[in-house]
Length: 197
Image 1 (spheres, rainbow, N blue to C red):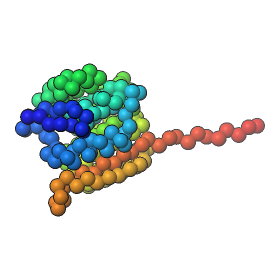
Image 2: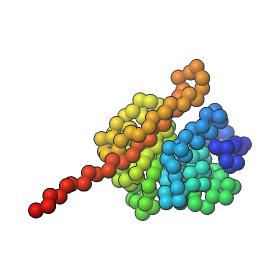
Image 3: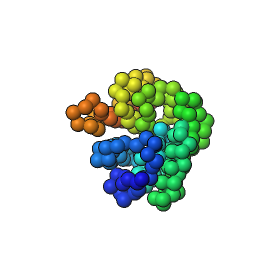
Image 4: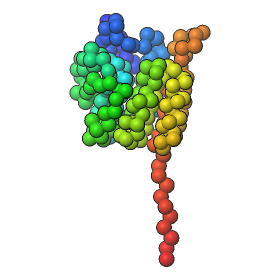
């Protein structure tokens, strides 16, 4: 099995039991929008959570200094590693980890600047405090469940992030299946004015 990714000539190999977006046309639009919104560059270290077999990680790797993909299923992590190697990306690494558990210390030393997360329907609430401790400047949240996205985005806003952009993508016309993308940015701390005496 293989599939074209983001119109950049990259190939994504996957097993039939791996999770993958089945609407390829909309998936390519989603990946293109993610690259446009995050604007990854050679100074960025991007953390791609719930990365699957590298759907977002690989295009990010073409632009960023480095990308760390995290996925719970070891078989998908192995497929993602093989996809990175097959596409000549040596700046993309993958880790198997349960994202319902805190693992912030693992990523603090990596100096992560941006986070992309595409969690399952249950959302990523258990991992949000870990993301906050990492202190990325931007978070791009991709979700197939508007209610868990709203819960998680509201929590991130209370922790110092603000919503910059929101978009809906209709994955399957005339159904309720949509993907929502929300871009959040860390609020800048206001400097105190020092009065001259």
